[in-house]
Image (cartoon, rainbow, N blue to C red; front, side, top):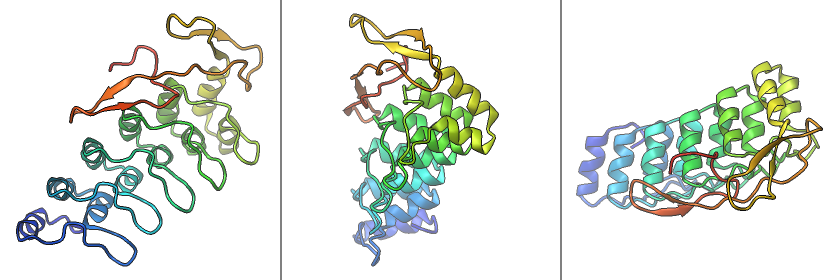
Length: 239
C-alpha cells in the first residue's frame, strides 16, 4: 500500500490478508496509502472495510495525512467513507482543515468545509486556527475561502496576536488586504428571518457583534447527512 502497488494490495486482500494490520506506531496500510497519495490502494482498502479513522500513536488519521500532503482524490475517498473531519493530532491538536490550510491546499480545504469542518478549532500549542495558518504562510486563496465560510478574522492566538498581525509580519500583502477588508464587515444578528446583513465596523481589527450560528444538513455523495460547523457556509453557497 505504501508503494502504491494496488494490484498486489487487491490480491492480498482477496487472500484475506488483515486489512488493518498495524505497525508498532499504529500505522496501517490505509494510513500509508493515504499519506503517499495512492488513491487506488485507498479505494481498495476502504472497499474491504479498512478502519477509516485508524490513527497512529500521534493521533493522526488517514484523512489528516492526506490533507496535509495535499492528495485531493484520497481526501475525497476518505470523506465519502465518513472519515471524522475533526480528528486531531494527539500532541498539537492539529486537524485536517488546519493542516490543509497551512499547506495551501484550497480544493481540500473546500471539501473539508463542505463536510462540516470547524474553522475555529485551534491547535493546542499556540492557538493557531486554520485562518491563521493560511495567513501566516501567504495562502490568499485559502484565506479568502475561509473568510467566505465565516472564519473569525480577529480571533487571537495564545500570545494575543491575530491572523492579520502574522500576515503583516511575514510580508504577505494580498492576505493583509483580505483581512483588512474583512475587518470592515461585521454581521448584524438582529434580523432572524434571513441571512446576516453586512455592516461597516468603525474599528478595523475588532468585531462589534458575533457571527450568527448557522446549521444546515449536508449530504455527501454516499447519501450521508452531516451537520455543518457552527460557523456555517458562505451566504448563497450551493447545498
